[in-house]
Amino acid sequence: MSNINIDSEKARTFDAIVIGSGASGGWAAKELAEKGLKTLVLERGRPVEHVKDYPTTNMYPYEFEHRNQLTFKEQEENPIAASCYAYREDAKHFFVKDKEHPYVQEKPFDWIRGYQVGGKSLMWARQTQRWSDFDFEGPARDGFAVDWPIRYADIAPWYSHVERFAGISGNRDGLAELPDGDFLPAFPLNAVEDHFRKTVKEKYQGRHIISARCAHLSKPNQTHIDQGRVQCQNRILCQRGCPFGGYFSSNSSTLPWAQKTGNMTLRPFSVVHSILYDEAKGRATGVKVIDTNSKEEIDFFAPVIFINASALNTNLILLNSISSRFPQGLGNDNGLLGKYIAFHNYTAVITAEYDGLLQYKTDGRNPAGGGYIPRFRNVYKQETDFLRGYAAGFGASRAEVRDTSATGEALIENLLNPQLGPWRVNSHMMGETIPKESNHIRLDTQQKDDWGVPLLRISIDYDENDRKLRQDYYEQMSEMFQNAGFTNIKTHDDNRRPGNDIHEMGGVRMGHDPKTSLLNKWNQLHLCKNVFITDGACMTSTGTQNPTLTYMALAARAVDYAVKEMKKNGLKG
Ligand SMILES: Cc1cc2nc3c(=O)[nH]c(=O)nc-3n(C[C@H](O)[C@H](O)[C@H](O)COP(=O)(O)OP(=O)(O)OC[C@H]3O[C@@H](n4cnc5c(N)ncnc54)[C@H](O)[C@@H]3O)c2cc1C
Image (cartoon, rainbow, N blue to C red; front, side, top):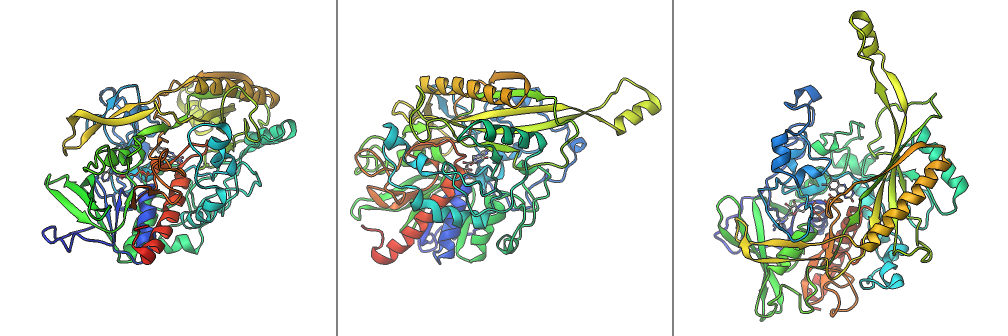
């Protein structure tokens, strides 16, 4: 952690600045520091040191005052945070509470945030899949948003780079729509998950159930051991922070690695207010920070700036970076900053039961969560009356049933020898949403937060495409469930509000043309070449994959480009 002499401009000048220390910022910091740049990482939240700052990580259920539940008061006070499944007694200290950081919901939107060193990389569910060309080609083929300026081949080596260091478990499934990565061994499917895999393979062309791919060290190699991380213990208490470093987080992996180079200075409690722009030089010179403890305003300087504050906050920082050259926000001549926000549609769930395979049970726990069904709709050609499609999760389990109706010895016997219930199966949809200009965010013109930063106004909603896609998921999955012999199939409208998927993306999209996009193919602002955006804000469309692996790969790729260009021409081009 830093102790910078803020009175000296020299001490406030670095080779590079990274804003945000979460999943994508951690990667930018690691890559910049490894390449020898003195890198300042500015983080608005508190420090969270790996292991030391995971207070609940070894607690037993009975050690939690409310047995890991939320009190009614807490739920009432935090309807947004509490809408996230992981906001429980054991992990709530990593989540932003509703009253701490307000925003304006023009339309209902759950903005789930983690403001601390490590960001949301501490609480994430670690699902990690590569995009394929079917995703990068989507907008051009189907005529929405703008064409991505990159294709799979541009990012593939950077996926490998990230996967090898972070540690991603998975099988090499050989699917064109979900390219294989550099994997550690997969966590296996259980008997019923495998039964579903076999049925679907037999009865459907182009549909697959695979082991979920996730950022866990199923079998660490030397790269991970060098980071001080060891094998995942399958505790599935991940959202508390893992003292084994069994799953990837900035705190366990990229940040300590960057620290070890001696080139990173991490400054927590530092809210970035805006980017400083020098009109004479035609470039950004640094950032304006508000120290959250002293409320002091401090400027930091560097020739290159990476903004990784998470998608909506990155939009906010750019919108708030006003100069006479850029009166609508940095790089925003086309007025598209904050527009074409998209997200994932997680509003559908299916449950069922299975009476077969009762000779099997599940032993141990699967941190990957079971199976994953890659998108099978509209992959090779448009075949439905909605655009794009959905991926899905799939899991099966048997609950232990303890008969507590007896007393005395019989009760003890029952408690010690629980019976296994029937197999229960479930699936949840992960749908792509189409970026639209009307789904946007902007700054509130009246209200500001405690640090003088305008509040964000969020105006985002589902549309007809989302509803049709959901209906199709119900129909297709129900049929697949029936074919597998599952019974008591029930569809549930999850009724999640937009944002609850926690995969908000866009607003600073990549594209070929400065008239219709903000970033070029290197994640560089078209109009301010020394500012790079490599978090979800850069996403031109959303795909159906969990997005963080792609942000991390784009971050590493952009750093490589930025450093080479700096050496060539100082990022003026
Ligand atoms: C419960 C949960 C489950 C999830 N599951 C998955 C999953 O399975 N797979 C997947 O791909 N993704 C998942 N996600 C989403 C994933 O966590 C995010 O996509 C990822 O963390 C985004 O990385 P980021 O660097 O953009 O943002 P973050 O990790 O959120 O980091 C942003 C950082 O910037 C800081 N910051 C913000 N504003 C400022 C400012 N003005 N000045 C200084 N610092 C600032 C924040 O405090 C934060 O530390 C999940 C998230 C949650 C909460």
